Length: 261
Image 1 (tube, rainbow, N blue to C red):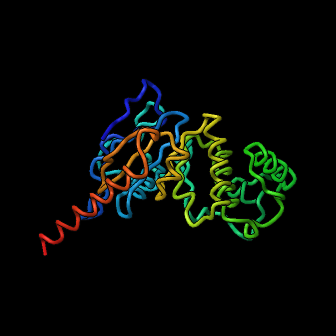
Image 2 (cartoon, rainbow, N blue to C red; image 1 turned 90 degrees about the vertical axis):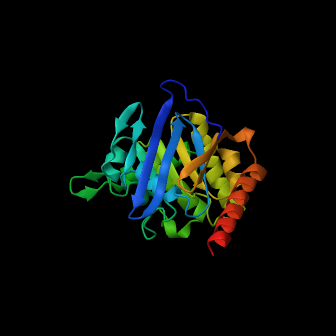
């Protein structure tokens, strides 16, 4: 693994020797990961490699059994998702946690609705949602339409915008390009490029598509069997190299299976 040397005080997040077990199963054995401030990090790996488990630890949904997390230079034991959010860490999963029947602006303010007296302040939420989406360059013709009427790319963009405008400084994206066509992927790429250009949000993207990850990410980590086996600046690796590493893993697993048969 070619590790990148962190700059002093330059990390938004570090995971040091993090491990996680579920009974007899070791999901993560020794994870060492760093996310620089304003950096976009691609976390790649096959199914079962431990990506989802690591994401759940980083967003406070689960706690590690070993190792430590350092957020903005301070060691933290994340006790819950709400605790992580209070520290500026938020995750956007594939299911997006949007309510299809509600309007765009109501989804933008889900669980943090603005009220005036005992009534929802729809005018304020509508105007702010429009302002936020426009500021991020997200093209939604109307914030009054239900999200069910939008494309997958637009819905993903709304979920990302909601996290950013909830003061997320570390954004964890679980397969943001999954099951999307080229036009929808382009929408999310534009949103992420804008965030990257601003340099105010640090992002980890879990992805299966190596080409898409290399295009948007500053650095790539490859997770295999509970450990990060590759850590490279994106320009210093390629789809071919990543494929070769994974194919070698498959071949080794097949050989071990034949020997044990």
